[in-house]
Length: 337
Image (tube, rainbow, N blue to C red; front, side, top):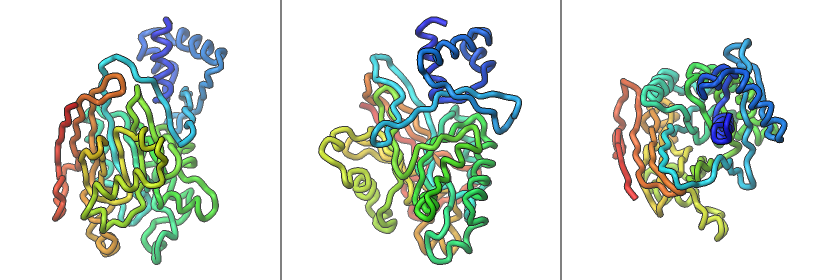
């Protein structure tokens, strides 16, 4: 392989897990050349990890595990002069193991994601439902164990092998950590091929100078429903130093609020993609968790770290009730530079 192809191989392994044969097919070379290149990269000190596929024990998967920099920043690539396009999905608040989780809604939405060409889905927290978050929580979950909840999540993600889920812990996931130090997303990552743990409550992913921040909010939901932009930006800027404010993300994917929101404020594209919980039950109504179910398909064109075009489309299951008061249902927005 030439140097340019090797760089593409490294980028691919940073973002995906592949077998040798899959890489050979992707780069149109034979398997021995891929294997030799991987050995060459390992000799140069690039740590290429292998693991047996959970879906097919006969397959060995190769990948480069990207570790975060200070501040939980996953730095993928530098900005450059090329015209580029990026497309991905954004969801939040799946709440696997909650009795109110909607598996049919989740799986139908993920299938529709795949049909639109999405391969990466970012999850802004509350992947599992956790335990002891509120009075009576144990009555609302299928299992209180971290093993049981991550098993449910792993089984669900495994049904969508063409999608890669990168996610942070929300307050529900983090409840396990608060109680006994356990990290449910790290356990989940070890159980399924297509999930990457980005850490707790906040993470940045940087592609060619485009910074995407995943953030799980913490403010009151009633205020968020009335003043969403102010709430999300307060969560984003809260506690930031001056140098942090000058290096804010271009895209904010926020969770926790179970509301549907898509706008641009202070130069930041803000996405809140509701949840996958039944909003009609008494608990969800009382807590204000009554948003629709689905996720955003986000597509952008960019160059030299600057977004020139930003397009979003809300993706829902084929059968979806429209909630009262949701002003941003099924919206498609395009922002030009």
